[in-house]
Amino acid sequence: MKLRFVPLSALAVLLLATACTSEQTAPSVQETPKTPEPTEQEEGSDEFRSFRSTPPGMTAFFGRATVSSRGTLRSTGSYEGGDITFYWTKGDHVWIRRTPGASYERNAGSDIEQRIKNGKKTRYAEFYFNGPFSGSTFPIRYTGSMNAYSDRVTIASRQAQPTPNEAMHLGVSGDCGTAVATREGRRFDFTLVRKAAYITFTPYNSQGEIEGGRLTQIKITSADQAINGTFGFDDNGLQLNTRPSHNSVNGSTTLILGSFTVPSRANAYKTGAIAVIAPGSYRDVTIEYTLEDKGTGVTATITKHIPSISFAAGQHHLISHDLDVMVFDDRYYMWDAQQEYWYDYKRSQPRELYGQNDNYPRRGRRRDAQRIYSTADFPSQGSASARNNPNVNEAHWYVEGGNAHWDDQTVWSGVGHLYRGGVWIRTQQAIRENYRPRRYRFNFTGETYNYYDFTSRDVIANHSKRIIRSGKPSSTHEYFFLPALGYYIDGKLKDIGSQGYYWTRSSTHGSIHTSYALNFRRDFIQLYMVDRKYGLRSWESK
Image (tube, rainbow, N blue to C red; front, side, top):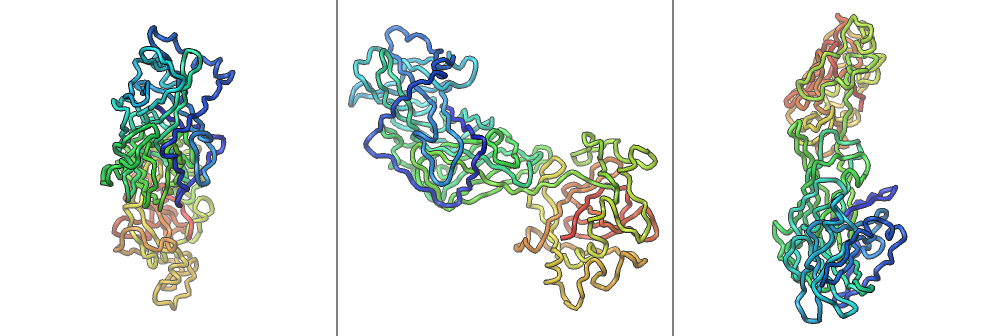
């Protein structure tokens, strides 16, 4: 059986961070769902009419797989928007009991393959059983695809979905249901009531689409009881009293994905990933989203926590987490150039380490005039792309009092790929509150800690410090992050992921070809003079 999540025009975003109301199914009474009358659109569709004549000596049972989440599949909490659509797929079969107390028998054939010859799925199917049926109603079980048993269902600990919003794996992952078939002329009709529980994941990244990084796996883990394994199955569905004892295997379900892109807003067509789990109430749930960039070799796992969550049989939840990965643009500049380094040549911009292209800006070429650095002399300050950068005095303070932390664990996206590497630097406010001694007036733009004003004083401002702290600071609100985005020189991208280079807006004395820049790597941070022809990053004071 296949399940597909169909979003409405406005997809609801629900972060399940609190407990949801538990819905219980009656333990001994199977409600007979009313088989919906086909609409004119259904009756006129090729899919509805495509079933063949019943083979001689057999009885046909016509099954609808489509069920709305607003009908049989109920939702809880504040989830709103979206329908659940089920389909029959190759390998699906059902079981029927002819008389009370008899064993269930599997259908002898179906018309599923005929129906899906031009596709992968169908909402309708006929299942054929040998011999006549004289009664008016018969119980039916669906225990998944390729399952040889009518009285047990195995919910898989590893499930695989290659395509977003196309969950072709559910039939072999534990999807199951029951029904009561009702005579309609010479055939019997039934509509399944689902008995597993279902999660649709639609992760997104509010800071922007994660370029290069692909979502390759989602893992959900419960700390207190099994969410998968083999369960007994009867006419009421999964026998939850047969739940296996919790262990490291059945306590988590891993959904292997086919490299889904992660958009900036929840979108089931891009990241819709559906998992089957056992109904129940679970505590201390963790969901791990794994991102991978094959170009850079960077893999990252982002973990979200849910204190508790409950699923009744047939229940569906939408879980849409913001992965909160920092995203940075791909704009570099020669010092105070009017346009970025790759302006008008964005398709040529190298986006791999050591990648190179000859369409970099050159002096003397009229068409490159807007990309070439300014030749303003000292003490001029940047007035174009560098105008909002910190000046040399501010950068001096960041080196001196910024308490830089090198972080090679936080993942970020930039220049088309996933990377690690960058520094956390104290904001100016945090420097004011933490720098010792406190006798300095902290006029960051006007002077440094030793009272020099390098924007006007004709002396070298170079300053460096060793970085002795690593990892993300505990008080991140006092810091800002600069990624190690490297630089361009003669059209070649260098040091991305290992070093960062950021222009100040300040020129240096003695040359119209150099200006001050901030540089950092794993073990040190420095302010120094850089040739203006380099393509570095612009930034703002924090």
